[in-house]
Image 1 (cartoon, rainbow, N blue to C red):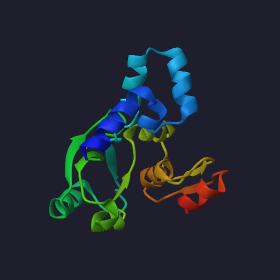
Image 2: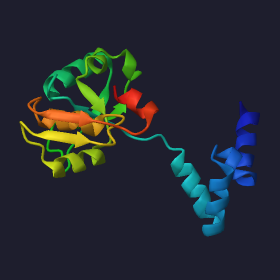
Image 3: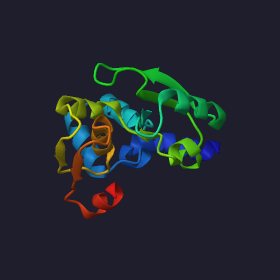
Length: 170
């Protein structure tokens, strides 16, 4: 309602940590290092939802099959290409229903992953038949991309020192 919005707007100026839902220690640090306007801009930017990207899992599907499925599932997307991804591997998801409700997602046809994380795997240049050790593998995006580039012809040993993250990787 209008009163809640007015209170939130006031808090964003009077008590930025509370108004922008950030740790007080972090806002205090930023306020010591930056102007008030720069802190406000950083807080606003930091509360902006991240852009979601889908990497096609070529071991289970292909871009054409995923796009056809997205048409019936109500997913709006853009094609994205970087030097390290090539074409028809990564798509920016502009609008979509909850992913856990989509058959294409639940079938493992794609993985939600920032495309910047794919660059390190490309630099690794995994080749069929290789054995690769991923020491900090959770949550699994780079690990599964390594397996994808191996075309499931090789071995990926995936470890993670954090037990909670290791469970996610499983």
